Image 1 (cartoon, rainbow, N blue to C red):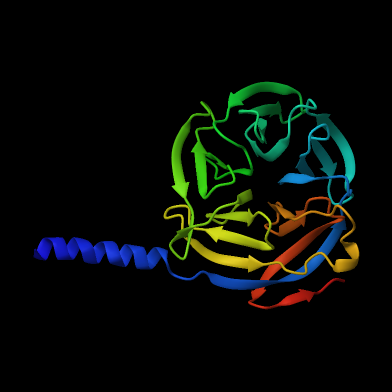
Image 2 (cartoon, one colour; image 1 turned 180 degrees about the vertical axis):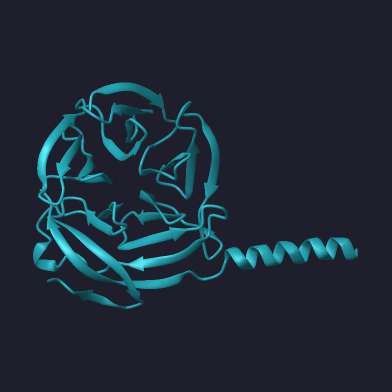
Amino acid sequence: MIRLAAIALLGFLASAALAQAPTQYGYRVLEQRPLPRDNFVQGLEFDGDTLLVGTGQYGRSRIRRYAFPAMTLLEERRLPPRLFGEGITRYGDRIFQLTWRSGFGIAWDATDLEPLARFTLPGEGWGLTHNGSSLIYSDGSATVHFLDPATLQQTRQLIVRRDGKPLRRLNELEWIDGRLWANVWTTDRIAIIDPASGRVEAEVDLTGLLPLPERHRGTDVLNGIARDSAGQIWVTGKYWPWLYRIELAPAGTRARDLQ
């Protein structure tokens, strides 16, 4: 009986730890750069002094490389009209891009954006990043998947929980300082996730980041997180006209320190 009680106590303590409320942050905008408004952003990643953008929508999906910060389009590759592009990430000499419901992703040559191979993708593809040893992708649920970059076989699954409950609609991803950052689709929030436990440790509330006068007809939701080579964090959204460089601030802060 004592042993059973101890096991029950350990289970309770573990559940309590997972249910701990996440730390809340606001934001401060430090800089903004123009982004062509025709980008339905699904993936965002810095690659040296260039910015990679993966876009979605049937017939309009592509992968683009921009010079940064000038945002001059250097090259792009269009996906076939039947494919809906999703998240992207560079790993080694390849850039990987997910598709939404086609059952596979695409590996591109990182130098010239030539397609190299397809890889099987069970279920849907949403956001994509890597942690230096694994590709990590979301599928719109509360589960993120870890893939071996060499074999592209799944090595691990992780259920993300907020206050002990599964957090669904995880979308675009970025690996930052040992933590997984994830847009939560249809919200103005970014979840910061412990990749060992899956617990949402913190949240960034980006409400009001894109001012109302900039929200034209068709402007979609927040989606896009990227860290540049200097460690600075940039965010954007689908059909947004700006990239924003932000820093975390106390909860409730919505500040613009633009120079």
